[in-house]
Image (cartoon, rainbow, N blue to C red; front, side, top):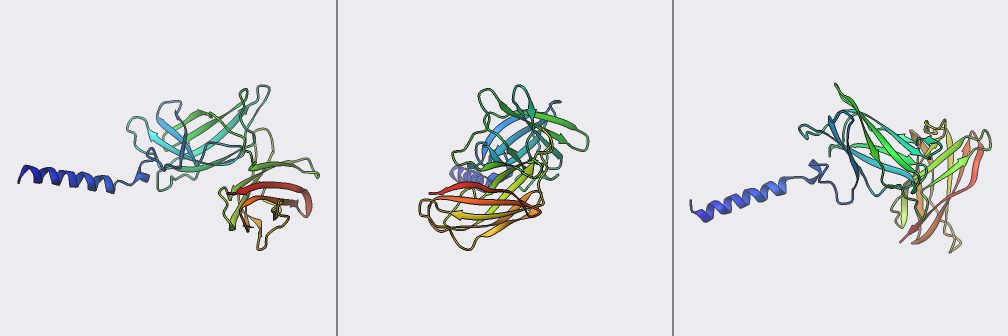
Length: 271
């Protein structure tokens, strides 16, 4: 075989190898829209843990993606019990936040899917940490993340409600739509309540009514569906935005027919 033919064959094989390599096979070569928040080793140095999100972290509901590799071999861990423990150090007190721990098995990309509702933004004086406990068949270790920033959004994706019935504090967070479009959008909220400074269970017994309004045009929209509880404090419905611009989703929240709030809202601007 001629030298030129050998070189051509090698180049073809390399090209095929590159094309057949799916980007999602390696969580470290993640989707360009995914943001690496931080990496940390577990306390016994057995696992390297990487924390990803769809965007830089903000006050409200954040979907998180966790990559776990064995430090000695860099093999991906895809079967583990994982528990998240977010903590806000406010100097004179410490509190946690609502979490959704991952299922025991990673997704197709080798990532464990979780969520944290950061109930307040970080500041120069106060910040969040996140403990990620990893338990496998023979290991139980924890990685501690110093969260660099939890930002406050110009249009808030979370609000608090204090019940007039028993003074229970509820945290309502927008899940969808985060990138709203003209037309009917899936609408999803989570609701958690404060049981203690370290416990924020999902609220599963509420009724939510929504009414979108375009304040600048003094009109609403038809064909909306009130969110109903599906599981674990998630409430899903439909919201209709008939044009671009600033919209306000008014919300009435009830428990057993009693009104917890009738003046709550979330603003969304469609570009």
